[in-house]
Image (cartoon, rainbow, N blue to C red):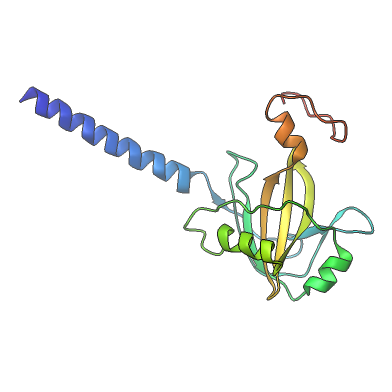
Length: 175
């Protein structure tokens, strides 16, 4: 009898721990980002090299302070891809990161396919928004836009414990 009780206790404890880990990973650490309405979506200008706001609507975003790469946002824009390409800096190697399933406006798999086939274009939102992490903005042909944070080449090297490459800024203390 004691063996059955002990086995039952272990199963219940494992089940509770599993549900708790799932909740913590998928829901607990994300917060909705309050939109300012004017400068939530910024792309790096070809002329100045600085991020500047673009025209957008229907902005939704989530973020987490537990990781610099958990930021995801969706929006719409009336700006054409041709205009964006002539005005803003393209971002090579854009790879959208998966968002939690409940943030359903952001489909990384579909966006990745659109980036590959050219129906979506990626732009540099802000390089080194945090050391080694870039903000990437992608816009599809129909004006849907997406934003996420992606580890850049400097971060990939430094986060692995190697010294920063020559073309990278000096990492802050603690990296």
